[in-house]
Image (cartoon, rainbow, N blue to C red; front, side, top):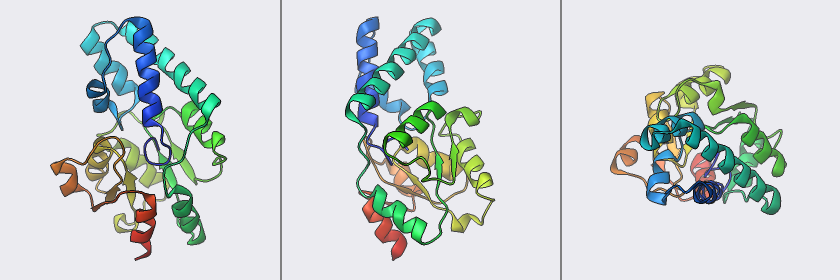
Length: 208
């Protein structure tokens, strides 16, 4: 969802930076990038190991969420290029859309509501619904099961992150990468079915 449906990763990073500044923490983009496409639980655990203070990290996450929600309520949250075109095409073709995001359900529902997308997806799976975050396959396996466990060749995962492409691969599901903040690595170039610049290109790919 983040970085694929919504142009939200930049908002998250800004929210994290503001929280870090308030708490006197160092928080660079080089550090942030490892968490793109994962989830809050993984971020808390990893940052606790790095900083050695779980209470500090939980406060950091709390402030970050407050900052992000405030910015979204003030400024809205832009959709990524081609999303509405792709989503409308899939609806017209009767193709099920399932949203599997490492984000918390509260954030997912807020983002969807802010863009009038409350009823856009047949199912929603959040990071709270699975044990392990991406790059583990849990969230995509759950999405596949909720969709009725169709033949894997009938499924297509769309991902903007390296962790997401790895998760789809581990779930044995074909995936296309639409890079956002992170460029594809040599590994993701091998794992992804295709790497496309935006969702309009994905729509054209599916139609072809």
